[in-house]
Length: 95
Image (cartoon, rainbow, N blue to C red; front, side, top):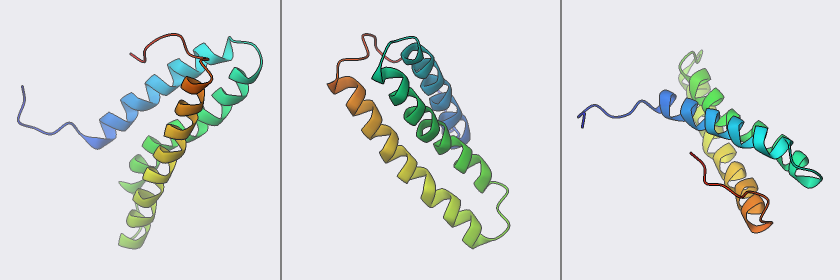
């Protein structure tokens, strides 16, 4: 195992890819699953987008602001995933 920590940009990117795969699965389901997928794709991919944007921040305040948004989006994403699980819409494990 490498001593180098796994880069946060890479981790959030990989998470976004997993969210996209889940949302593609949900979009094929009837009814509310599609609507939940729309919510989940926005919040789940926004985490990595904000982390990535922070790397090009114009100021320290801008950097902090963008990094403060990411955990808020993560909490929202966790909420939508909990709804999906509680409603038994998913029938597979996230890869």
